[in-house]
Amino acid sequence: MGLIKKVTVSYSTRIYILGPDDTLYRLASAKFSRMVDDPTRHRVERFAGQRVRMAEVIVEVRDRAPCAVVRLVYEMLGFDAEGRLDRDAFIRRNAALAELAMNSVIPRMVDVEKAVVDAGSRFVARGGTWHPSAALDQEFLRAALDETPCKRL
Image 1 (spheres, rainbow, N blue to C red):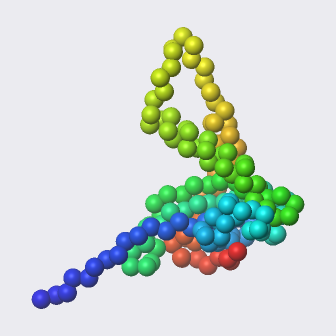
Image 2 (image 1 turned 120 degrees about the horizontal axis):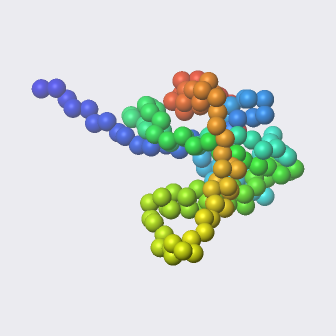
Image 3 (image 1 turned 90 degrees about the horizontal axis):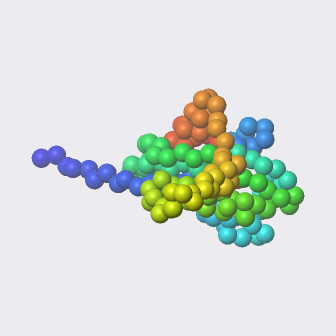
């Protein structure tokens, strides 16, 4: 009788930052959380005074090896002159994205005669996103699946 091997499946969030010179950096999720929670104490001087491109990737992991990309979101991150994350802009954009997602799932009760289109959230959300070239998109996918090395922050 053969043994049945139990496969462990989990999900991992991976954060990548694309530097101004197109160098790809991996940023530990815990470090990114600390940057959002307390930007004053958790700075990235390398990106001081810059606005950089970021990718947040959710990866399916089987037996401790990444096997598939489940979700890939491209955002922009701003840093002040001392390398502190612009937390307020990041939170505003993510709140706007959440509002847009909720609006598509939960319809609002509105008076049709007085309805006004509130596009504010849409504009805020779009201002924090970017779209990579096909080649760059593939680079992020390969990095997320550990197929290509990248520097760590």
